[in-house]
Image 1 (cartoon, one colour):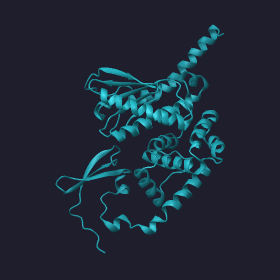
Image 2 (cartoon, helix red, strand yellow):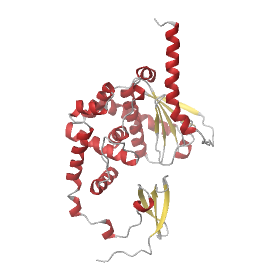
Image 3 (cartoon, one colour):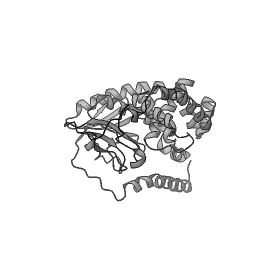
Image 4 (cartoon, helix red, strand yellow):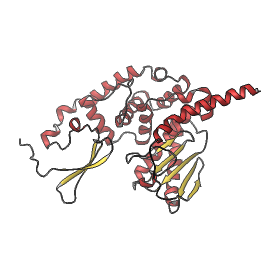
Length: 339
């Protein structure tokens, strides 16, 4: 039985936590205007575990997402040995432009965002980019977040009372699990981690790893754990974090080493894998002229090059301005190195 005084205190506690939780959202949204160019007439398809929201003309896309989501659910529930505690809404947009108009979040959505999971109501919001493989990847990636959040926090209201909601996973771990579960190991991760290992710009796992590297480095670490200790250790790790609320204690319990020990073992594995390749590969500048220089322009990502239709330039995606954007560079005047 709860007394009147207890109810008042409970209300004050809820209000305090909600206020704390809402501060980041208000800060992100303040001073920004999200333009909505059209009104969306929403319909719904319901599956065993999901409510798929779509608008006029996109029923085929919604059905495709429904199939992908249920397939991902079967795969993830087995991998994590966990079933979700509630039905999950998935909101589907037919293009990235319309996805950017969503009011599920007040935050402005950049071009590089491929989807997101909103924690308060566990809603998944995704766009279709024209690639069904990318759609599969994004659906599985975001549903991995849903499973992780459900394992970490359970019901939101319950988490507020137990203060569990205020515990956050390191970004490399959160995104590493989702990338590994949705991609396994792919050529892009291989490229990034090979370069990171050879040039030494990876981060220790007890540091605050941010940006794109958090995704690929985390993916590499989770792959290492799955290969050395067994794939089931990923679920063990998440369950241990859920109960201990301490990452190092959870790692010690799951695999016998903390994040410092894991960093050392993982880096040694990277070196054994990639350092021998230095002797077998040419330096890129021995093959052709350098077209980008991240040290000079402050970029981290310079990817997806393509030759312009007239053959006079190369265009590529870069974050040199702080935002992902397309840049052209002329290469016809450059002289190839001579032997």
